[in-house]
Amino acid sequence: MEHFIETIGRNMFAIFGVMALAGAAIMVASRSAVHSVLGFLFAMLCMAGCYLSLQAEFLGMAQILVYAGGIVVLFLFVVMLVELTKHQGGDIFHLQSRYAVVTVLLGAAAFAAVFRKTLFGAASKEALVLRADLAQGLDVATHNAQAVSRGLFADYLLPFEILSVILLVALVGAVVLAKTERV
Amino acid sequence: MVNLNAVLLISFLLFSIGVIGVLIRRNALVILMCVELMLNAANLNFIAFARHSGSVSGQAFALLLMGFAAAEVAVGLALVVALYRKRDTVQVDDINLLKG
Image (cartoon, rainbow over all chains, first blue to last red; front, side, top):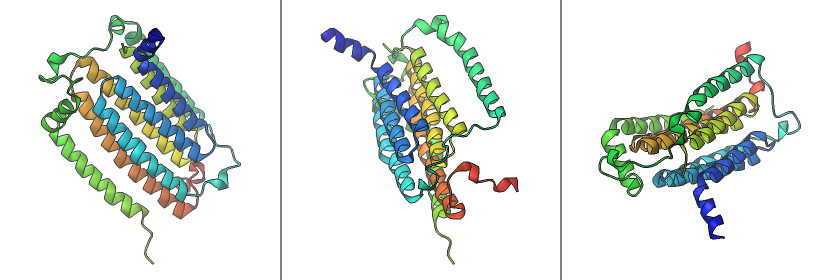
């Protein structure tokens, strides 16, 4: 029994990853939009689990707050606002032109060409370990939030401030787009 | 232990599911969700490489990307609502104004 639990603990990332893939598949394949949103929610929660098993605790919590708490609720509100039942009977999929299929195949080939080197090369054998000496004196694993905040507010302060402007623009843009036109 | 390959493979598969969803679904809402999924796959790669190199930059950028995704989804959903008001549909192949 202990051995079993230990095996699960070691393979936590793979378990969460496969569950996230399953949630994503449900999202793409399900007919009802609400089921799609629920599949998306499941995939996002499993992604948070993946982040946690990669020892990015702060990002795992932020993932749950931002995606499961904010974005999924936003999607559910829009599903409620927009009446989707009209197209319930029709086909939910449509295959684009065959150029799109060719593009996807080309992309898959490019990915495979990259993976052929990384998946089976010498670097593929080494496990992911944290190297504390590179993290500016702070261990990324044990002082995760401190390390991330140092990265965010010391090294990347300008991108952070630009992001705040982007959020403001998105806020104003969303209000302008979604408001009813005055007669 | 987590292998870098496992992370890259999961991230690649998530990205592929996102691309397939964007290409074959008709519903604009599901297409937006698939775009979010692709952004998440990129985030996973950021975190994996941050761990691989031991530096914190990848995690900081993953956090920035999360805020960016939130801004994107707000504008996207506002567009969907505006589209529904104007054209009374959210199915992307009913929207062909550019074809003339």
